[in-house]
Image (cartoon, rainbow, N blue to C red; front, side, top):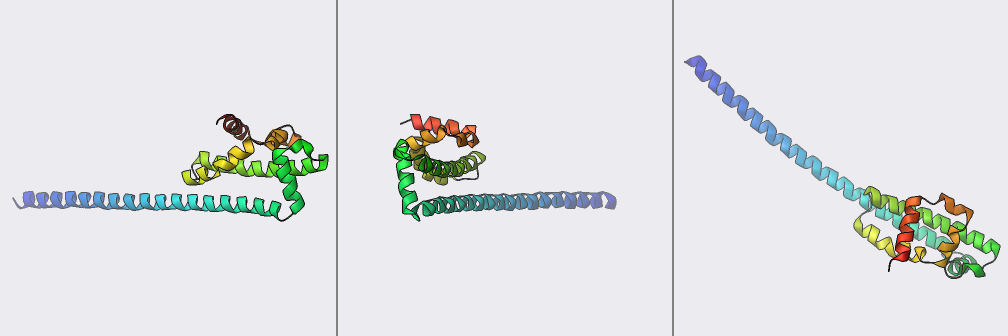
Length: 161
């Protein structure tokens, strides 16, 4: 009789230990999920901050030089009116901007850019894709360095209204 009672108590204690272990494991998994969500939000925030900084740097470079600003403005609207040297300079700026946009596009595709960050850059994507300067850039030798995914996306948004 004593052995039987002892076995019941040991079984009860073992089962209680298993239940406590499962509860503890569930708690740890919940904390781990919260940590992962927090890290994902931090990554998205850093991604937006980095994208914003790069956007600002690009604009500051152009704004710092009135001649360059005028060249860029003209390139976006009427690139054919620029001299060959000005078109070359502006096409390098366009290439730089497109590499930046390609980075944003890849961040979105990989899920490291929030929907808000993506949506805030759509006017820039659309404005560039629909500009005569972008079409002029596509005719340069440098355009081969532009990724096919970005090229397809730019083609898609340039034709949609």
